[in-house]
View (cartoon, helix red, strand yellow):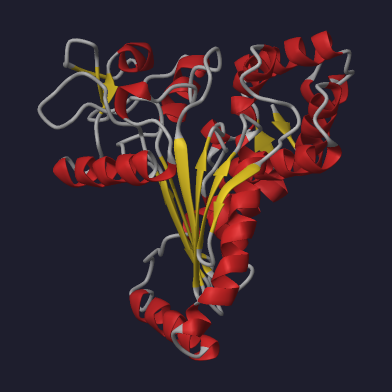
Length: 342
């Protein structure tokens, strides 16, 4: 089945309101979730909502986000999310980073005691819309084994970078693993196999079974290169921001325990380096050079295509997710039959 963007927003807002989430916070969570589904990152969209509901029920996600600023300097800050919705905490962190960047040229905000924040590219997009470069990194609970090992120690550790342009959407949003953990969870829910060369089972053998992969480990992308990048992110989103690291990171996939991961949110103002119009013009010139060969894509093109298609054709909703959402709405006393069926 498929739902429209408007139906998804309405459904999320109604669920969150029933759970005691303030309207402003609920709107942020809904927009970030929809952004993921429109861009094609369904593993980080509505499919994550059953996890969030469990997190609220377990007391590990606080319906009302109350952020504490623990350190504040002209270009940097450290904030405590106090276990609020990761979407809201990260949104506020990027707002702080952008404000600092517009004053000093760069703003960096470290986050701890937050939660899963959906799709990282939403927050780098916030910077793009203010003619800033946005960078988002985070660590996650262990899913990736170091090269040569089989025990998960590193997270999937996503990286998002968005760059303002006069003509194109320029954005990369990726895990440093061969697959995001959410895609394995999604494959498990749908009863589908995963591609080869993505994961190992608990014995360190290659597997295409998502259930066995979730018991084992996900491979880093690009072998040692992805591993090295994940390793560095683990430190910058862990010790640097007073968050956990390695095997001590919990709660990004298992909502039954508190989330201990960290995030590092950054914004850069190109106008503090060069003329802004010149910068965007040269970015566009580079894009034109890359695209001079037919059928060449740049980072962000696939998301633009997916957004257009999903806006026109609707957002896919698999049967098992629809069943889960019906159970949630039924418990909350919400009549959503017109959106997800009876």
